Image (cartoon, rainbow, N blue to C red):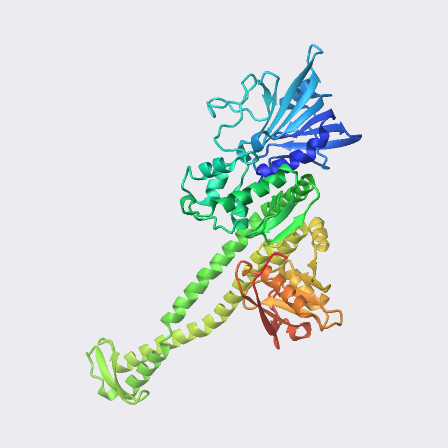
Length: 568
């Protein structure tokens, strides 16, 4: 997540409206986060400050959390020193990933003093500290003893110092200093940018290269047009100085992230009026995805285990089929021995016969000298019949194993489209119906199953599209919800979701067809591939064979389009 200097600048600009405000309430609902209630500009504001390693930030929030009955020590220290305090200043020093909030409040003697709440937003090293006017740490939400960091301990009584570093402030750097910093280390341009300047993330560095039409992988010493690079760099940070931000959630390489500027190479962008609104949406969605993934760990493991077992079976079946592919040779040798019994001499270990099945070409037949010619022929027939029975039995087993493997792959794809716990319940119920997990019949699960349904989308020209999020939904969507002339989409010979384009009696446009095909490709095993074949056909040409597994259908009279999937 690029919680870089630009993002910190955006949120610092937003919360600057708190200057002059008064701190009414301080709580610490979690061990690594605090919430401040601040009255400013005639309105109440709730500010979340968290040092969670995977989600450090400061922003306005609308969330309500229950605080512990006994306030943690850090919360008590804050209440003692800054409760009812007035906010004097909010700043981002040297474009670091740090927010400093100066607060004027009364001390124990009733005298006014200034304390600084320091929020360091640095991944696993994030922290929240209260520092007095002399620069000493009053307390921190995370204590860092000398045994962990001898150079910079964070403990009550320790002198606070900012994290060490030799990076330059990108807001004030000159052209000469910019070039000097870049050429100090002959690495890739992108790396030189984020290693040389405060608050520049790899994503921002890549954006600077992209806008400069420069490959981010070029070495600094090989770069010819350094002036163009600086002009782009300067333009971006000039907009930041003028508080021009574009807060957005974007998707890139199968993940979604946040930025305070537009990322040109992103696939999809959703803009927000403020960084706080963006944070709330981003972390709510991310936490939901994480929570759902955690609750499907057991199902993923179970399905993966069965899938691996099916793949091993497929390999074993292939080997066996290879071993018995020459079974007809056994029959031929048995028949030749039977035809030439009178010519086979006892005690010999081979017999050369004319093969009347192959233009009388000579063929060498191995025989057991301990057996009679008739017994040798019968031995060949027995081996042939055994391999023939194996072949017949394998045909059925291979078909069933292929169906099971395709089904398990489709379930794993379904797990990628889960959006809530109701989807989990549906998949668990489906797997129970197929005998992969023990059946659960609780009322709670039944209610959860009823609340889920296919995902709905709209094409850019107004047609409705639906995507099944699991095989149960695929069957319902295709066999019950879709009407005869609606279009059904599915990746060709690739596990994935069923997609229905609702035509409402109209002729579907080429745009609608391509967007529905994109949905089918995106919700399939081939979502990261290019030129994915997607079959589509009217629903009336789709049918489900008797006894087929959930989600399996057959179809005819179809068309095929090729699409490179993008996030819908």
